[in-house]
Image (cartoon, rainbow, N blue to C red; front, side, top):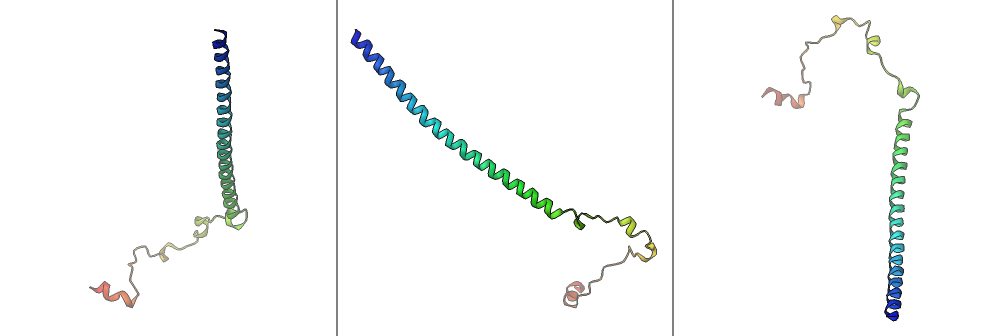
Length: 101
């Protein structure tokens, strides 16, 4: 009886040690996966930041940000000069025979 009890205790200790090794191995794999995901996330974040910086640089603070006030630009334009009802005429001799058909 005492021998069986010792055998059970020894078997339980071996199972515990095996479970600890498996847990440690899984934890290492999980840590690698987590580190890889973090690396990908940081690279994506860096790419987005760089894109935003390039966008801001392209817009700039200088003349690229100027806007045009068309009301101010055309305020003195005589409306009789504008021909809104004008017909479109094709001036290309190359395609004129296509239009005549």
